[in-house]
Length: 184
Image 1 (cartoon, rainbow, N blue to C red):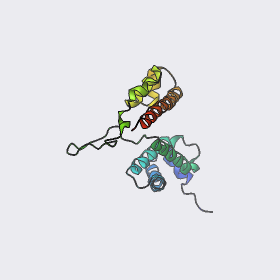
Image 2 (cartoon, one colour):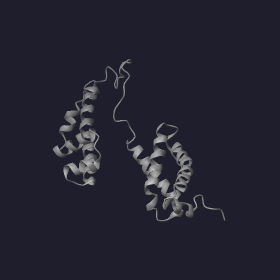
Image 3 (cartoon, one colour):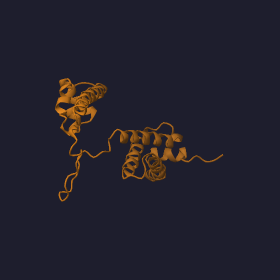
Image 4 (cartoon, one colour):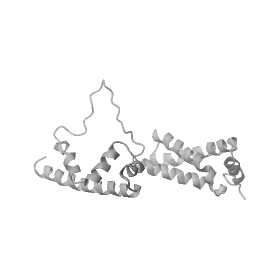
C-alpha cells in the first residue's frame, strides 16, 4: 500500500507546534496549489497571491483540522475559497495607477453616447438604504463592516447589493435602449 502524500503523524506534529513539520507541509503544498491555480486562471501574476493566501488559510486553520489524514483536501478547499474570491473580484486593484507621461486611455469610443448615461439616475431607483450600502461598497467596505454600521446582518447586506445591482441594471438597460433607438 502506498504511503499517504501527507503522513497524518507528520501533520499532527505540525499541529502540535513543530515549526519544521509545518514548514515542510506548507512547502510540499505550494507546488500542488500553484498547479491548481495555473490550470484554472493561467500564468497570471495573481497566482502567487492566490497560493500565498491559500497557504495562510492552511497555516491559520491547521490546528483546527480534526482529521490529520485529510490535509490535502483541507488545503484544496481553502484553494477553492480563494479562487471564488478571485472570481468575485477580490483581487482587483481598487485604485488604478496611471503614468502621468501617457495620455489616459478612453473607456468608450468618441462617438459612443453611452458614456453620457447618468449613473446618478440609476442610483435614484434604489431605496436610501440600498443606495447607502452601494456607496459603502464603493468606498471599499466589506459586507461585515457594512452590516455592523447599519445594524443588520451580513446576509441582508449581500441581498440588498444583489437587488440593487438588478434594479440598476434594469434602469440602465432602459436608458441605453432609448439612446440606441434615438440614434446612438
